[in-house]
Image (cartoon, rainbow, N blue to C red; front, side, top):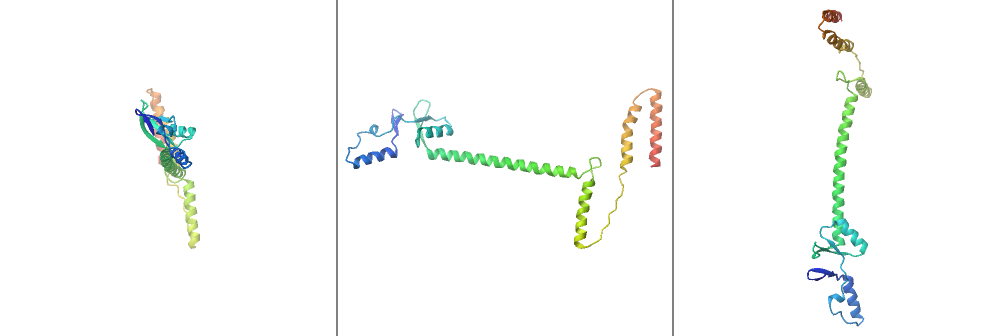
Length: 205
């Protein structure tokens, strides 16, 4: 790199030195100064430029080294193709790691969501116990085990939750509240009649 008062004015590359040596082998005199050998003007990039901008400049100018200058156009450093390729590789590796981490998080969330959906598909929403699908899955499992070990088995179905009765009572509660919400004598008589009727039905059941 050739500078004048701190400002880069040219670059001497291996190709330039090879040309000087070839000329010397041909019997030509050596150049008098670096100015006679250097490639000028020097292609520069500001020190606040991004790696992508520097790579674009290198590719457009067909060079392997890029002079870095500060805001005052004074020499700040030198960046090569290897430096830019390493920076690009590091950037790609970071993006790959970030993408892999994101995919892993989404996969875990999807696995949890699928497990929740599977649980809900086997659960009765009102009673929060196994539904018919869960019963059929358990029956298939035990049937396969019984066939495998050649053992008999039995199935007993019991109505232990009184769903019909519970549904009737749950349906009648809002009506009872609506009837008793009034302050008139008629509303009070209606509320008392419904209460007696419901109590009799519950004792009979």
